Image 1 (cartoon, rainbow, N blue to C red):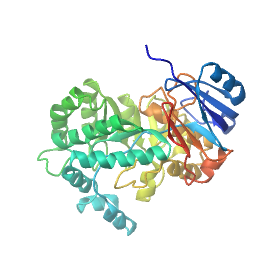
Image 2: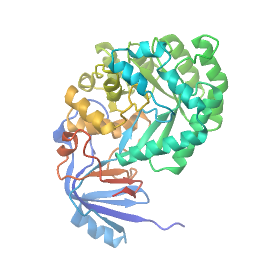
Image 3: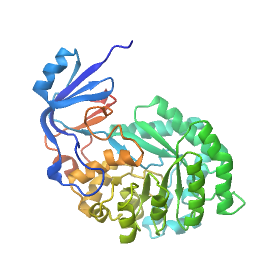
Length: 416
């Protein structure tokens, strides 16, 4: 029998647990649970207890816990969860960005041979070892920035061999890195230029040839599709998602980025999340609010494309479960810094600290179907991060320029 392992962390200037906050709707900053001079007791990678440091220290000593001393002022939060990224890729799209800030549109660039297809070409040309190396570097950077769990999509292979190459790379990196990677199969990103057939025929190709292998190799239990006029329309998306769901996959949808229809489809099929939502209007917001589908907004895409943010304030006021994700990708969202993006979204959409922190922790975990993280409370995974300050309000005030100085994943210190 393995011996129980206890670790005790503290003292923290403030502990922001996010306990007792609801999954849906607007939040009040006054409802944040703040424990001053706090400690965290961890047992076998899970949180056992939190509370005032001095009293909890007595209990920790009785249990023989190893003490991890926090030597200076620090505010501790749950580890961040980034629920939408495309960080498994090769190449760069700096040329696309230069064209975009010169006035070319996203769709114009794609028609001229840039856009997603450029990254598909570069990723197909990369070896598995190349992708593993690049993804390892990016996931390590995310961990340093406080992201302890991140979703990673395929979608730059767009054929059997290269989609599997991407998903296997994600699996291999997840087995050998600390930041936990949740894979999503986005083979339905666009219809590849070298596929001779209709969009529906390409989706049939995926259903018959790609998804069965993804399922048999347990490479992902999640499927995504880009529902948009430039990718797959609502009818073809519904066809694909219904069949993928029947195969046992959980669903998420790239929805309402440039036109509406995708979020309604996501809700009708019980998708875990509908992501983007920059084009969502009152009708779409009402539909999302009446469902269990998480509204995942991607401020990085708005910043990269120079378009409006998703209407996050209206979504929260209507009762949506709002998650905030980085959409880190080589084209439309190359920044990749979740905290900076969330801070800027908060400034523009008037989201308070409780709403922002919820959107990048437990509500983002909900978008991935994960109920074991996102708060600092007993029984949950011991993923927490510390910032070098004594007042939690400093974190968003610096708009992502203050990075965590302490990162703990499953009770193990990864940065201090």
